Length: 232
Image (cartoon, rainbow, N blue to C red; front, side):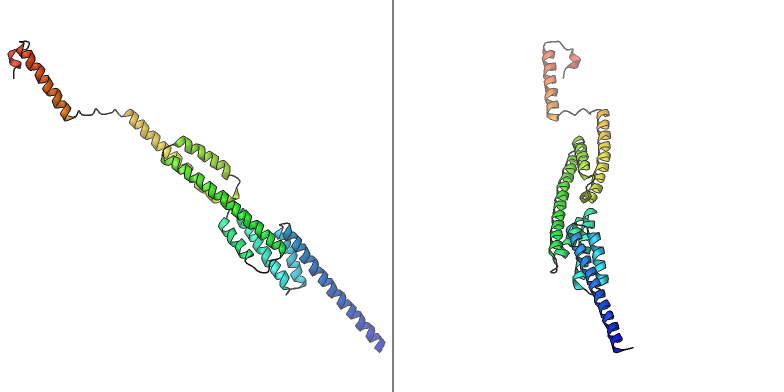
């Protein structure tokens, strides 16, 4: 092969290599851009898939690795919040926001999730106050009021993922209401059917009446109303 031919082959291989590198860089940049856009829209699953593609093009790229880890935390926190696991979601968001490598879009999403966790916690706190009110009504045997409060609380809890655990406590209070009300009704019925015993008179009052009666008898004896056998 002539020197000219060798030069042509080397030139072609160089062009192909450069084209391959440029194509690889383009794929990486497109994948990262798509991932960042997906994060900004809150589509964490799509963002994770995009960063996986970026790492296929550049397996050791630290920026893509950081994005992938941050996206995983955002997705995890969102999943926990939707399941009503507020404390766990709060910890995950705190772990995310403690990182020093956050991009602007990731930081915005992390702050938004932190606000959502805070709002969900307030809903739970308000609902816990409802449960305390119901328990107070049961303690006072105010069963009609307790039932109305239970119905209102159930309407609030249904369909709210933040109150998943509290719905279980609400069911327990409903069972307690039924049992306690049944026992109360039985006790009231027994009280109604049981005759009230006559109270014994006070001894002092009894003696007062006794001596009063004696005085009346003696007075009648003096007048001769009573026969002699009744005399004392």
